[in-house]
Every structure is written in structure tokens, then in C-alpha cells.
Amino acid sequence: MRLLVEVKALCDAVYDLKYHHKLQGFLYRLLKDTAYSNLHDRRGYKFFSFSNIFPPEDLREGDVRRFLIASPDPALIETFREQLARVNRVNVGDMSFSLQRVSVLRPRIGRSCTLVAATPIIVRIPKANYRKYGIEPPKDYPYVYWRKRYPFEAFIKQLEDNLIKKFKAFHGETIEPTPIFEEFVFRKQVCNHIIVKGREVKVFGSLWTFIFKNLYKDKRRIIQFGLETGFGELNSLGFGFINPITERK
Image (cartoon, rainbow, N blue to C red; front, top):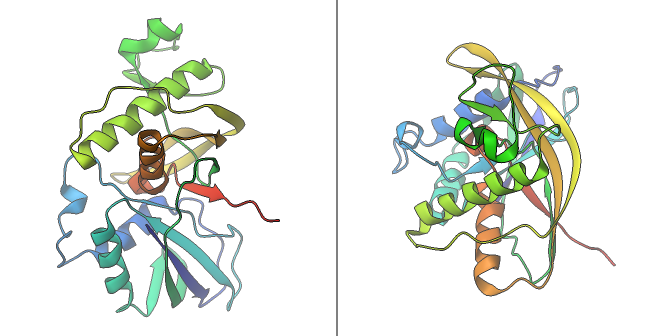
């Protein structure tokens, strides 16, 4: 389940490429004094994701932009919707908008589908797996971000493990690790700069297209879950946001 939020620029502004923690902060402020007011401080997965503000171009006063909020938790999406109904203005750093419209969307995974990463997917490979994948980092890092110089197997395996762990944590179900991704197309590698505890840090991610065919029930549930919670890590910072591609006749 997800929300499509439409906003209108109140003034000219340069598009802020470091929007992640600023848009995240706006969303957490919406949850103040709700049943989800402690979500920011809750340990573990947050079970929501959000897109960038699109299209990602410099703003002129009056320009219309949109962003999406997604979660497998309908109550969380409803809370966001109710709180947005009380908002007139959306401030994301120096980008200021008036709120125009909020729409509820319910995209569903069919037996066959194509998914695209709308924001970079972040995958970290822990030190314990370096030897398994033949990774030799230049320093003794506790983990490395997956990059295209590392085996694709490492990316897919870590991505599947992360998605299954999130699924188990959300649904409280025990499921066996299983191959999830069938066909995938690497599009490009990116480096984003984010602010963490007042410091600017680099995170490396990648953009992909995923193709699924003849999905059976359980596997379809896992992929549907991933569509809403996000693929990979740092979903609540706007990474790994996934969109379905709808074929048009």
C-alpha cells in the first residue's frame, strides 16, 4: 500500500540531492503524537520506504512535484494519510511546497511482473563473507558496500537474505531461505551523500530492473512485501524504493 503525494513549489530552488534525511525528518514529524510516534527510535526495521521527489530537477515557483510513501503496514499508511490531511506546507530543506493532493495506491504483484528500483539499492557485505565472495578490501572494514567490481552473486544473496529477514520480522512467520530473484538487469552504480549524525558520508548503491515470471503464492507474497517495504538496506532513508512497471497496450 502506498501514498502518492502531489506538491507545488512555493519558490525557485535548487533540487537538493541530499534530501534523504530531510524528507525522512518530515515524515517522522508527521507521526508525532500518533501510535507510531516512537517509530524513529524503534530498534530494527521500520517497514516503510519513500521515493525521491520527482522529477529530480531544479524548481521554479509553481512547478508540480510528487513523491511516494510505501509500507506493508496499512495502519501506518493510513496514519500518514490522516496526518498529511492536516498539512498545508511541506518543507524539505530549502525546497518548500504547498500540499496539493494525496492519493492512496494499491499496486499488486501478478503472476508475472517487472519491478524497477526508483532509488538506489544499498547492500552491505559483512566481513564474515569476504572470503566466501573473494572480496579483498583495501582496509580492514567491518563491511563493504556492494559495487560492480564485486561478484553479482554477493549482491543477490545479500539482497535475498535481507528481504527474507524483513518478511519474517514483519509477519512473524518462519520461512526457509529460497532463491527469489530470477532475471535482473544491472542499470548503473551510484554514490549518494547522506547526513548521519551531522556528518556527511558516502553510501554506494545500484539501480536494477527485476523480471519475474510464473510466481507461485508464497514467492509472490515475499515480492509484494518487498515492493512496499523496499529492497536492500536504509529503506527508511529513501533507498531501495521499488516501482512496478505496467505494460501498456
